[in-house]
Image (tube, rainbow, N blue to C red; front, side, top):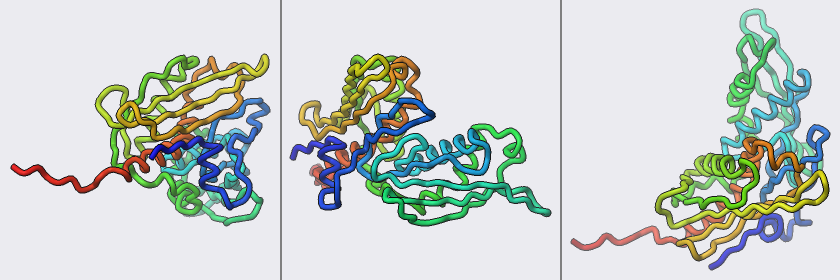
Length: 296
């Protein structure tokens, strides 16, 4: 059965009909006073991690970014930059706890709030960073501290169980991306390969596979400063039968189209993975599990 999943319209309606208004996952947000709105979509709530309060601004923001990356490694749709209408909000206060007999601890109190502003829970985490963390923190230190706490936070919020199922179809071939702006083709393949690998799937450019993935990118100038960008991920079986399409669309600044796509590609791939996994698992569910052995 042909399945069309156009995220933001069909997929969201399928999951949320009867549960109130259909969410708008491309709600415009402001990032560092920029007009940039990242093309992210998810049919689940996901979680947006606000800057950690307590330390100076850039430290809190860097920690929030590291925590979002750690949660994504654990299969949770998370970001420190974007949110959709159903997104959970994770804010925190952090401080240094001094001890006489041991190294200082980083104590963080996490507050989880749903899209209606209702408090879902409060949790405290404690970790002991290296001494340099308190004076000259580095990105690597933020990553280490975030990974130390990420398992607790992931088990606590767990907003995205839909992508936890591993796929039995282990290889997908991705076709070349045509007319991709800047270096987007390189980084989109790399980022998509990484997020699918977390789901037990290998993405390749060459080789045999029943499933093929085609990504179409369309850009349209809106004004002198902004472009509309649309990404359609088309999954096919045997190069012909279409299983479905995962679509993402949003407005971004013109300058982003010509800058490196490394960070942006990771956010795009993270937003697309849930819809792709639903298509893949739908396909695998139609396959016969018990194949009789051929008689010798």
